[in-house]
Amino acid sequence: MKKDKMPPLGHLHMEHVLQAVGVLEAVILRSFGPEGGQVLFTRDTGQVLLSRSGTRILTALHLEHPFARMVVECVWKHSSATGDGSKTFILLLASLLRLIHAAASKGSNVSHSYSSTKAAEAATARHLADKLLAFGLKELDELIATGVVPYGGCISWEDFTVEAQTSSLTNNLCVQKLLRSFFHTRCGYTHCDFSSHLTCELLSHWNFKNQLPSFSLQLVSDYFPALHTPVSGFPVRSSRLIEGQVIHRDFATPPLKTDHQPVKAVVLTGSLQPTLLSTGDVLELGYRGRMKEERSILHFSSWMESSLQGVIAKLQTLGVCVLLSAVKQSAAVLALATQAEMCLVECVSEDELSLFSQLSGTTPIWDCSMIESEHVATLAFCRPIQLGAHRYVHVAFQDSEDRITIKPCSLIICAPGEGQIEQYACALQDAIRMLLRTWEPMLAAATTTSKSTLQSHKGASLHTDSLTEQTPYRSIAIQPIQKPGCVLSAGGLFELLLHYALLQHGHSCSVSPDLNIDASVSQLLANALLSVPQKIYSHKNTISPIQVEGPLGDGKLSLHCCREGDKLSKVSELDLGLESVSCKYQLLLAVLQCVASLLKVDAVLPTHTDQEQIKCHENKGIKMLL
Image (cartoon, rainbow, N blue to C red; front, side):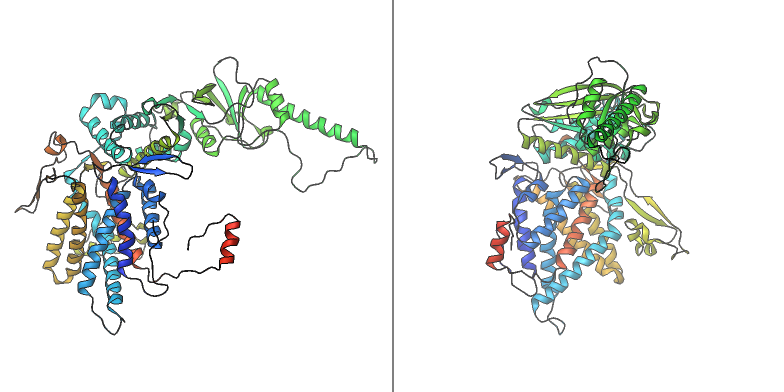
């Protein structure tokens, strides 16, 4: 991105913010919507990559503008939490800023408090942004629950199991549509069906007994780097699941010659060889008061070897034949392990050892002289596996009564190049994050007081720690306002429904003179939401396939979409896909928070560095962007 010229010192104006966000919007629009294209990346190494991921596109830009970097940071944080919505984030942000600027230009007047019209506009815009954020934290959750959720449906955790996919075609289609829409926006149309089916198959294996779906989704999300293995040089459709866990290291000693069962393993976090001295300690060796260095060192070495042999013998007594070590072991350990026909795997990552310990139900050990039976894991097998050009360690776990329903598996992600593998791996991990957010219900504070009294305390739906003993006269309980797994037809339906809900809310608030501010703020947010469906269908000459006939006399909307329980609708026939309501809600809150943060910036102070200091930093390999 080209660096914009900014005043060296003084107040910033809305034009500076709009200019920075407008550049990002122009970049994002190239890949937005169902007909959006892919962006070509060329790295310094000459590697070429195509991507539709908004987060990947934005983070790949070399940005110098401080506002642009603030926006990308906000987008990255939101995408890391929800896995989706980076392109819609930019569009809504740009639309809101333009509407705020237009409203501030009309409603600001120069007074004794402001030195210029620009300063008055900035203050008005900052005030509007704060009102928007307060409105979103107080009112948005209930508006979505009453005006949007009834037009959607809910998917359940059983929909991801293989049995449910074969027995319930309707639920299977809902799950497939949700994931297919996600992968379409991230990787294109070619492999979205295959990726959605692979994700459903992965989740069907990670179903813990007596645990909520969020537990399984959180575990898969946290350990995704350890659960997937990239293999380049193969087509994407060669990606598959394999039983057990793949440890991304090779054997340091010869693997087991016989595939006997069961196999017992131990996780080591320290060196197997006994350590008597710490860093800085001094060892004095002697014999009967006289120093005989050769004999003393030989005795010390002999003692170390006998101690190590004792540890190996104790491991053999427990039947251990596989050692997984977090550190590199000494040559003596390798030699004795080979002699004892033990397999040793060195330098295993912390995530892989943690996942192995959780699946096997064992505890890693630092000092093997203290090893007990609870430190020994029982495996179905431990053998090498060749994946592409690399050889890894493949282990499988025996069934346990505590986890009858779980079938641990690893994901093999194939693609022709390393860049494509990285793209598909990020898309799969973000899909898990999106599902995790989908299963988190939106919470609201329900009290025994009237509706008008509750509105002033509805911020507790997001900040429950603020509800303390300071309000003993009020009975407050946090209750979900929607079921987990709520989804809605994609293609701008969420924005259209919330648009009309905001208009109705503004109309009802305008009746009371005390709530006119809420009416203006809801009107502004409602107009900003229309930018999303407008951009989605801007490439077509026809109108949006989602027809909204407008409010009826009974205060409800007439839309050609399916309510919960309907089996067929015009929207489903158009195959628009599905999207998560919870993710959309979090997206709106993140955009409102970003707007408020941007407009709080009053000035940018550029730093000037002498040419000699710049050359000194460049000689040290540091490039400074000023």
